[in-house]
Length: 187
Image (cartoon, rainbow, N blue to C red; front, top):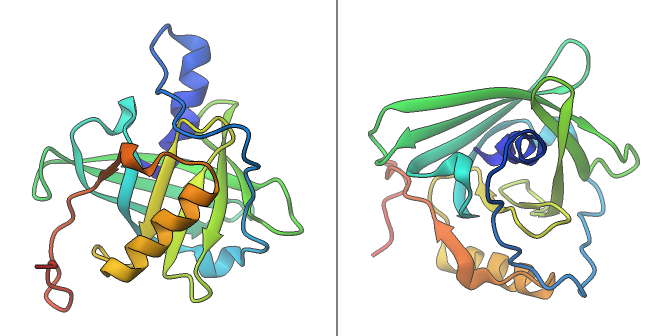
């Protein structure tokens, strides 16, 4: 789901389909995190929110699992639950590689063939608990977290950061995630 934007971006060149709307003021410079330790970025991320897109239609309980591959690139496994958090799992596997090795905040991702799409880590918490991911066109955006539910203050901080980057946060869809025993849903 999260990194499937690469597949969607590549697919637009192969098939005639409507691309998502641009939900970002292009006059605002899109900056990325100063640095990303890719080994700390590995592991499971839960999708907290996203801009709607064709490859995540009716998805709930969305996760992305990143792992180190033998060739040094990043393995990607995205999982979507169809229609509800307990729905049938649909997965997509891919790979990612850093294209700005000094900061590691700009990656390219591929889910098929030689087609690569942008995956930019716009911001990440110091403890790698939350990450904001987008790409230059302003059509794709995700709020990711290490837990399926985040606090209201963390959510507000993420939205504020995205607004400063020119994003129309009113266009975000918040992803249903299953409640966890140690992290009950907010009331």
